[in-house]
Length: 140
Image (cartoon, rainbow, N blue to C red; front, side, top):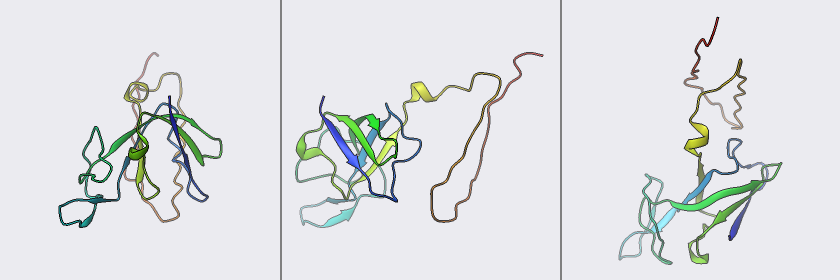
């Protein structure tokens, strides 16, 4: 299967929660949206397209690139299995994001205890709105 390699430069790194098997998408940051050749921002929302033309991307689209095959240890290089054609690949100005696999990530924790590490790699002040936990007593 063909692959595409995403390479990031320090200090930008691949999100810590991205893992092998997650699905990678991209959305154009600009698109050609009308017959007049005006260029518009595509950051106002998301839609889905199954195919892309070479010279026209509709507003509010996202494109499935493929699944993550590997991420290097320093989180600067990600290899993704893809079925996109060369004219459909994302460019350096496109917004890249990923989605978790619901089958693997929708279960509750099992065992006697759980440990959670919350990490914020932002350089600006951030606020944590809510943290919740799913617990139950299994025996006495």
